[in-house]
Amino acid sequence: MIKTINKSDFVLTPYMQSNDLRATYQVLNTIIPYIFLWFLAVKVVDISVWLLPPIIILLVLFSLRCFSLMHDCGHYSLFSSKKVNRVVGFIFGLVNAMPQYWWSRDHAYHHKTNGDWERYRSIGDFLSTKEYALLTPSDQRLYGMLRHPLMAFPGGFFYLAFKPRLILLLGSYDFICHAFACLKSDASLGLSTIISSHKPKHWSTAAEFWDILLNSFFVVGGWLCLCHLLGPVFFLSVYSIVLTLSAAIFINIFFVQHIFEGTYAHKTEGWDYLTGALEGSSYLDVPAFFKWFTADISYHSIHHLSEKIPNYNLKACHEKNGHLLTHVKAIRISDVLDCSKFILWDADENKLTSIQEFDQRQVNAFS
Image (cartoon, rainbow, N blue to C red):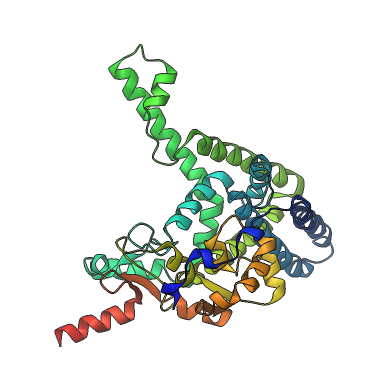
């Protein structure tokens, strides 16, 4: 049935209009409570450390909302102005230590290729069954271990806190090596020539580099200032917990919205964008309060049909087109662990499979 649906059948255009007033309200009802919760945490810790857990839970939830609104800014959908989206997105990126522009450029590639598993292997950089079969037994065990759901906790913290800084360092080192190589071959070369001849491996454009550099400058500077003002033990403890939990939750949200039994996982040849949006994205059935903290990203098929729809219009658009979305997979929180087993791509069958299923097929093939 889905194959007969065309994108023109959906009513999308009326919902693609950004509302600056609603966007401003969303920014204020996110940033102000987030800052206030940090102020509250500082005050209550002097009374009792046992008052901190509920505040930390709220900080995690508002951290999720900051990331969700940053995501909207990356699609230039939160505000009507591209410049305002860039500025606000940069600020939201500081909350979670993520360079917004650099991240959004990579995320745009995910939207462009969703469901095409030859070009984009999801958040876990999954292997095909053929690639997995070529690994040694120890490497196969390591592959499975690194993609265990619990790895979202250390992996998520590394992804937010360290990866952008590591990319900046590696990219800068790569440029310095390139500059020395250029000067060694021709000492008269100017800086502009050296820069224009450099092919960066860790970012695609100068704008991405400046985004990573400025984000790291303000993030690391903020860490140092807050350690001085609040005390390094208190700040780093609370901040690390908040960053770790929010990153792990969002990784799992992203995971189950694309990785589930029967998801669209096609080769490039014959891949279809519309089918990728409808069959390669799920609807996340979660409580209303959690939809608010994740800015309605649970309406994910609509989001993939048009990333220009701001979060505050996703629900209405989903309901308007509900008759065309009956085949979209609904995922609940209880399904997360079941979805986590689909970490191999079967290119011959155009589907995802589990290591257990792959091993069983290997046993049956040789029995």
